Image 1 (spheres, chains in turn brown, yellow):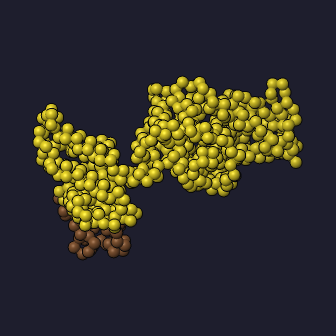
Image 2: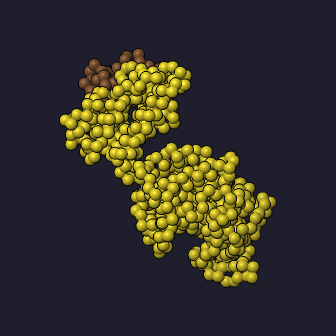
Image 3: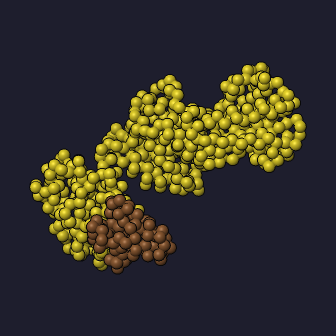
Length: 79
Length: 533
């Protein structure tokens, strides 16, 4: 996975959650960030779609609950 | 004060989008209780604005043609009515019903006398009546947004089933803009005056170059873009917005367009103020503001030239200066979709609005010259760089073309062909000086030309493209001509002026640059002199 994708996704997640950029890193996910709850997850997914131009289906919204998972989508799409 | 957002679907993404407006989401699906219960958050003093952005399809449920709309539709309308009446101090923003296109049995529905489409119309009529009765209820047209972008780009099934979010980011942005525009219109934040440039803005082309009949303005092709733009401007003026002109042109050319060009939609009488001259536009707009007695913060300025826009934005920051579309075909749509809703939104249109231009025209009085705004600072910030080419064989074609096409800033208007210019370049008795211009907005290429007769020290040709007029670039061309003459041992420079119908702009050019008049022929041709010592 490219570091750049991780960086871009981490920054997007921090912005969507309204937390300092340093709070979010490659290992961040819905399980270890208190601000990342199921509601905030929708904000992240919406921001992700519009930032990278990648459409998420329902299944993806359910699974893409970590920085790594989202970054892997960016890599795959070459965005 | 805060804003409360009520909905029957997940509208949370709107909250972040609308910052810095402080919005709190009500409990999920609590519209009715919030509007009806006197102890609710909506009724409390904490919120002065309530956004009621509901999902019409959820309210309509699975109702079919022939069946009445579910009670909850009526209940919503009644609750809105009651709330607005009880709380005249609060503003309620809501929208029309706009049902999805994919409802069951659409053909049968369309044909049925009690179709859902008909129900939707009735509900909307009631909402409109409500908004009419309650001035604190602001109603915007949801269907207009859906028509513009379409359901495919505004609705998302994935997010709907994953988290009750009906809309895509695009729809949230559009809703945010619609709410903001409704609030601005209600708060009388609409602008009052629209100031327009002429060449390549109100019509295509440059009237000083083509004459009044050959500007791009017609019922076909590119000319129609400008004509449609004028139609939209005329409609805007009928809503009470004042139009004004601020343009760098010869007044005579513009008069001719108004009097003779049959394709003009806008007439002189449609403008509350007209400034056609060569003054810096910030000075002219300040002058217009004084004569109309309106604040510059109620002005919008539309000009195709990025340098003029930047000058305006930099020197008169109160004036709103929207970017200009790149292509003529985008002009009418850009104006109707972006400029009008964003800056000229209105909630109520009065009878006087239609007559405003006439009122202001009557009041308009000429004031003295505007106080000098700081043009020097602006020019310094523009980062102008000029390159001068003397007798360059690479620029012969361009030099000939400039003598053919330049009418306004052209002191002698002598037209030369390529062989003429080549002879000047190669001979020892003439010099051809070309000026290249660039600034931080980009390069304009060759914009100035001087042809100097080295034998009698005379400026045979001196011209500038009107794209750079007002930036004092002509001084650099004149300095270079002086240098060339000095190098040939001349002690004075002779200026020549041949007045034409189009070059009134330069009638005092020599006086302004330290020359003194020496002779004046019966044909109007004048000679001037300046020492080179």
